[in-house]
Length: 362
Image (cartoon, rainbow, N blue to C red; front, side, top):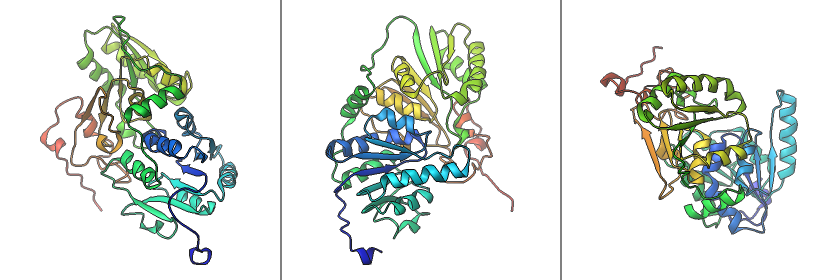
């Protein structure tokens, strides 16, 4: 088709720009500087997004998309096909489409079916098959920084990626938030993000582990603790809250999971004195707002998923075991769910635990 049509594939946008990001609202926040750069560099071009319903609230929080088209299954294959066709028709024959899904085959096919003039995709060692389907391929290093990979696409398109201060100012303005400041009322307000998506649940601490961790680090402090998450996390958060109350009897603990929209959640996070989190989308929102953070990593690595935000008050805890990171590297965690990389935040590991030899019998 390329030989027949002889289209001009100069990479500079000549019309609307469509971004495809189906899964991972946190990843969309990581791409915010690159996307904001495209928006400000091409104010006369519409910036449109194709995503799932789960990712849509994160997209709305960024406040930079002119249109958002959702693909949702609604519990049935028929609804999935219908919403996919509707989204495809909405962005058909766009000028430029950017596929931010690194590992998906279906997203590449979707981009191809749009018949966009330029189709930009990532490639890695297991995705060379995209050659010929995309017009421009960008190398994605699994051990590199995802935000920098997103930024390289924006720069290749001729956009200037804004710095930390400009991104933060824009994000705060889009959500009507004031710059973060300490409350100074005597009681320390601590936010907790205890939950993550179904991808790599090994990232999580158990209720007992959260209690142990907080008791060790926060004993004797006057705390007001708020647990953040989605509606589906509410019951599990009650168990978390009970464990934390047992570990820190003097602390007040509120389960805020599922009680408000993501935009309202961001406003509440902005009022925290500090935000503790595992690898989850709410951590990236807290960092974008400027709230001091403490994060705990294991199956995923912080250097691949944290934006470089100079001047940010944060503590990053990561025990780099030989098997970490394993997410997106192996279909199943080699530890089988024992999570020594997360246990390392709670106690000193034995030499065997620090240098595990995972053996699978054939």
